[in-house]
Image (cartoon, rainbow, N blue to C red; front, side, top):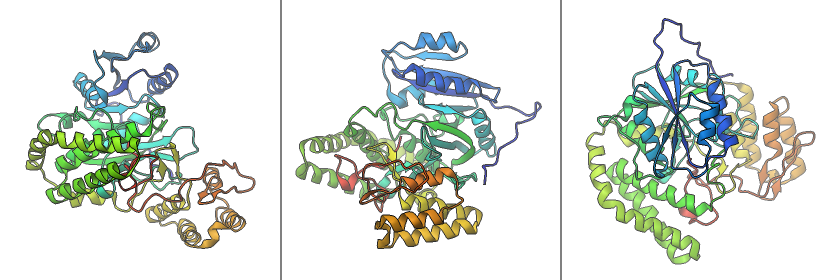
Length: 454
């Protein structure tokens, strides 16, 4: 079913002010131009754009000023990272009711802001809105419709890697939103509320930390499936080695655990992850050993600063962890963060059709889900001719992008193609993510691989 569109407010209705904050650090002009052009075409009238530059060395700011004179620029003297830059942008948006955080490597549909404002305005305890974020360049595959927490505090984008068949087309409450594209209530950034992003999180996991703190205070996050944004996943760090990203994710994850989880969980999760890092430092190669040692040392050195923060956060807690964690119940990621591509798997298809059936009661979705499940638990899935025939019959009449997804299906022996459909052959990947929602990375310890969160 198509996502329900909110009708524009009448002229007499109060229109909240929105400031879109884009963080820039040596962004390519073509990518930034596409983002700004899509914002210039927004249907929402009371809207300004603030470009926060993190001391870039590539000069695109003059070009932005020439082609988009309405964009307000905030030029920082040094690179403050994601959290520091966003905090400066939020402070500059003093007259805004909502701030829209948007990565430079995105472009949005014309009613993107209008749809998110309508969702956020439905309740005064809604701190943030998660739009429908799609992976740019792929055929209707999710990047995010919010964020979820997995086992051992691993966070990931809700829906990532699944084909869009309408399974997320109803607005629902979620743990949080990905700050690559979200609308946030500016009043929640006040010191007596959630507060600013933690400046010590240079990049990664700052959104998980902020959303966790908001949940603890009784704030809520909802999805706005009619607000569509297209995202080139991790465009700014694809050229870096994965260990660079992994180190930042894992260190900030541990900080988030200590600050926000209730005591028993905080101790157990921290112990398990530190133990695995120390084991990794003893048993694995030099590159992985150095990364794990740096994570453990950085975390332990940070504890004296984290514990007073924890005391203050827990003192103000209004909601127990159990109520927060249930917002991620049964959700899993289907994306490989080391190759930056979805897991084209039976499990991703099953998850999509199962959710669609639960949402809509569709008997067709139920039939496809259960038959995919039977295929997945049969050794016949490793017989290419049988599997191709069954999928062709089962998915007959389904949308083209679902058939394309199935044509790229990857099992242990390689890719399968379905005749007469675009067959994108991919290198061998795992059939499913781990039972805890983790995905195996090239270098980090298997027991601790951080789920994709960007």
